[in-house]
Length: 428
Image (cartoon, rainbow, N blue to C red; front, side):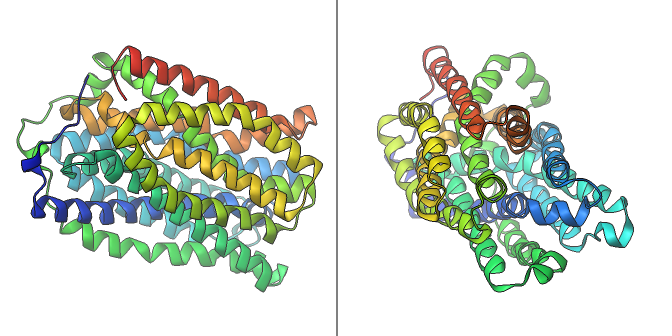
C-alpha cells in the first residue's frame, strides 16, 4: 500500500503557492481536453450530417460515435507512453507534451473540411483529430493527477479533485455553447459554420496553459529519487492487479460523464425534446460538478476516498432505472434537466475522490504510468465506447431504458473494484 501523508512542516507558504499553481495549470489542460470531448459528443447530430451525410441518420450517428470511440482505443497507448515519459523525465515535461498534442487535435477538428468539400476524406480527417486528441488525453489525467498529488502539501484528495472540477467547467461551457448556438443560429448557419465556434474558442485555451506549465517547478518527490528505468513494464508485471482493480474503480466516474454527454442526443432523437433544452441539463451538471467536486474532495480527505465512492456507486445502481423511467414517461424540459442534474451529483461524489484513490494504489516511481494506464483502460472499456454502445443497444432492443441497464452493470463492476482496492490493497 502507498500512503499519501504529510507532516505540519510540509505546509509552508511556498508549498501552498506551488499547489495553487499546480491546480491552475492542471485544470487548464483538463478543461481543454474535456471541452473538446464534450463539444464533439454534444454536437454529434450536426457532425454526423456534415461528415457522414450519405448514410441514414442512425448509421451516420453510429459512425460519428464510432469515430469518437476509436479515439479511446489509443488512450491506453498514450497513457503508457506519456505516463512512462513522465516517470522517467518528469511530470512537467509530460504535461507540456500532452497540452501541445491536444492543441493539434483541436485545431484539426476546428478546421476540418466537410464531406461536401472533400468527400470521404472528411471522415478520415476527423478520425486523425480524434486519435491525436485521444493519445494526448491518455497521458494528461495520470500526469496531472501525479503532479497535483505530489505538489500538494496536505489535503491531497482536495487538490487532486480540482482536475475533475475543471471538467465540470468544461461541461458547463460546452453545454452553454450548445444551448446558445441552437437558440440563436438558424439550422443552416449552425450546420455550416456555427458548430466550429466552440472548437475555435477551446483552442485559445492552449497557449495560456503552455505559458503556465512552462513556469512550473518539478515535484520534489520526483527529483528526490532515481527515475525508474522501465515503468511501463513494472506497471504490467509487478502492479497488474492494481491496474485492473483501479480500472474497475473508474467505471461509475466515466459512465456518468458519458451518460450526461449522451443525453442531448438521446433526448432529441428518441424523445422529441428540443435540442436547446437538452443542453440545459449539461449546464446544470457542469455547475454541480465544478462547485460540488472540491467539497467532495474535502470530505474524502476526512473519511477516505473509497468510502465516498462506494456511497455514490450504490446511488448509481439504485437510481439508474428510475431516472430513465421518469424521463421516458415525462419527456419534458424540467424532468430532463433534473435527471441530468442527478447524474451530475452522482458523478461529483464518485469522480471527485477518484484521482486520490488511484494515486494511493501506486508507488511514486511508477505513479504517472500506473495512474495513466489504469484510468485509460477504465475509460476506454467502460466509458469511451458508451455512446456507441448505447445507440446500438437502443436500436437493437427497441427499449429506451437500455442505457439504464448498462449504467447499473458498470456500477456493479465499480463496487467490485472498490472492494478489492480497500481489502486487498488497503486503498481508501
